[in-house]
Length: 258
Image (cartoon, rainbow, N blue to C red; front, side, top):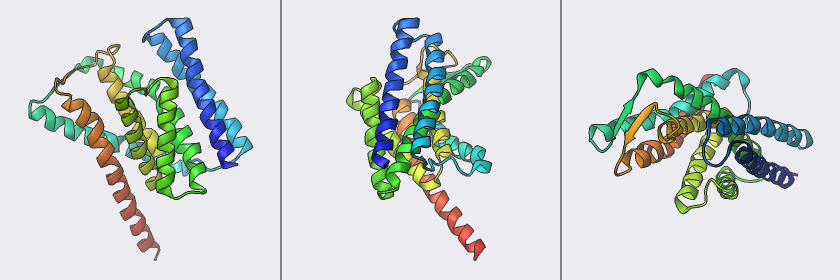
């Protein structure tokens, strides 16, 4: 049952992303377009919701969407666990004159637009699939560390099949990020936290690196900002910080209960 749930979810996800990519190209042309991005975000969110409704109806499982009363707090924890290490590392890199980042205050609204798009297209669908259904299915039979590694490998395979991770550096990005997300998922027991982390990562990187947006200008000749602030620091620090935080929070709750 677990293997069938995983297989149907994974194959369905690959089909949705490939199909939407094909349709977006047919309707809106090659390359990046805002209309194509909006189309793919909305259609992906809808189709993934349908896929998961079918999968969870056929093979019910808790995918980490509880407890609902704390979901906003968990989303915030996930977002801050990415944003804070990124901001600190970025500030150090700028202070050392290794890169410059200029932000246009009058265009900060663009971050909100990007946030909505990444939530619909990447953060929510991918987290519900990989750190939700697939991780939960693996965890019923496997230890946490093995479930984390396998879901990361499946995430890499997903990226390769849909054309988003077909080079060694992209595969490394997918693997490292999904390991970090898996650890956060295991530590908190909630997919809301990983959605927050994923959304913060996608919002900041897309708003700054996608030429469609002009909210910020990054000059990063040696790629210090990209590699350290956007990637290495959050992917290493966030899982450690969340894991340690959850350890002490759980221990304090046990002591309070005692």
